[in-house]
Each structure stands twice: as structure tokens, then as C-alpha cells.
Length: 193
Image (cartoon, rainbow, N blue to C red; front, side, top):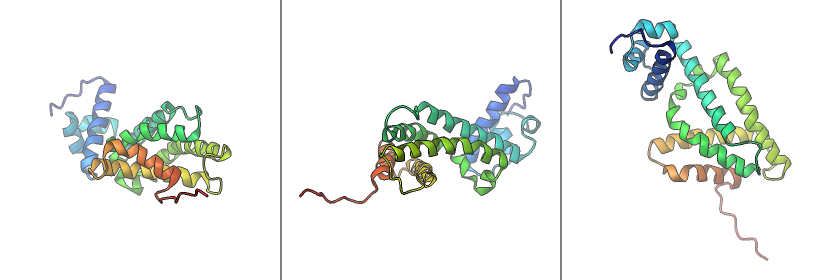
């Protein structure tokens, strides 16, 4: 740590956020002092940008939501059949799961109003994709769109953990999530007459 505080504002803030994300992925209880050390800045610099641990968590959460939102937008949610759209969403979001593991800090993080408010537009986008799939006959219409959306988000998050732990091969992850979401895990007997 060099304790420099003469870094340009955006650079110091970005370094702190990057360091906090890396550190909190490994140690969810890391202190602001530990974040400062990992970022190579002084504690006063961290406190200037993030006076409290909560303010740092909010910034990390908002950054994560922005990154996931961008990945969903990059998947072109209105372009093509819904199964293809969901495949692109999974392919773009799943690689972020490992980087965003610090979001597993628990309900304290997700009960912060700033994060809940930022999450809802993203959730509504995913709900709209699912609802379109239901209208177009690609997805079951008897399930609430929010249920299917939450299953998708939960599956991506859990499989991201499984990839990080080596339980699931990275190359199988996106295809597997989409296959189970769209077709389940049961073997369907051949219905030939």
C-alpha cells in the first residue's frame, strides 16, 4: 500500500470497487481497512468514497446490476424466438456469476432500498421475455412469469457457483441451465404410436 490519494477520482474509486469485489468474494466479512490495503490506497481514501461498509456494498451491488443489465441488453431480448433469447441471456450472464460472488453477502445486501429499486427494472425485463415466450407458445402459460424468471436467475447463480467450485464444467453450464429450464431434467419417453 502506498497510501496515495492523488489518484484521479474515477481511478481511485474503480480500484477500490475492484479490490472490494475481489476481497469480498473470498472474505465476506472483510473490513474497509482490508479493502484499502487490497486497493493500494489509504483508509481515508476509501472512507472519502465510501464512508460506511453499507455505502461500499450499495456501490458494488449497483455496479453488479449494471453489468448484468448490460449483459441482458447485449442478448437482444426482443430479437428472435424466446428460447434463443434465453440462451443468449444465460451465455452472457453466467460468466459474470464468478466475478459477482460477493453478492452472496446475504439478505442484508438485497434488502437495501437502492439495490431493490435498481433490480426491479432488470427483473421486469426478464419477466417480459418470459411473458413473450408464454404468449408465443414457447413457454408454459400456466406458470407465473416471475416464477420462471426467478428460476432462471437462481439457476444461473447456482450453476455459476458450481462452475467456480469445479462441480460443473464451464462449457456445459449455459447449455445445461437452458435445457433444464426449457425441458426439465426428466427423460420423456418416446411417444411414437
